[in-house]
Image 1 (spheres, rainbow, N blue to C red):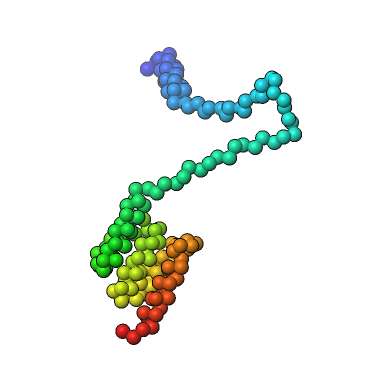
Image 2 (cartoon, one colour; image 1 turned 60 degrees about the horizontal axis):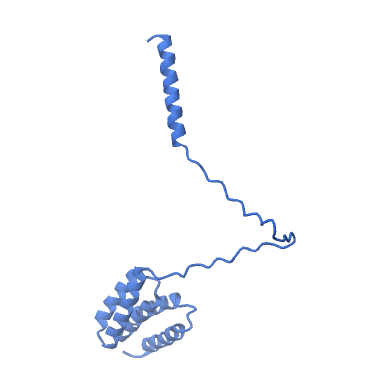
Length: 157
């Protein structure tokens, strides 16, 4: 290969590399400056502009959370019907869908209390207390359940 051919090959190769590099470049949009006041509007230099407060969109429960709540209700009904084993299965599935729903733990504790498995009832009551902490409606129920579990633990079997 002659020196002249090599130079042309190198020039073409560099040009092609440049074209590929330029073609892959992305542009970054510049920030848009705030609009200027209209000529007829009065200006108040000593007044601070306070941005409008943004409202956070209301957080809706996802499909897993909704399904878990439906199962909570289904399990509660089974518990009322004294179908304790079925209720436990439903509550366990509900927990697997949404582990932060403290009501499921409360009802699991209730089910194990009915079955006289005090240790299990105690564990689920503890979890209910963690997840329902601060809930003015549920915490009295959790505390009452905790007291019933203690009484059952101390009662002769």
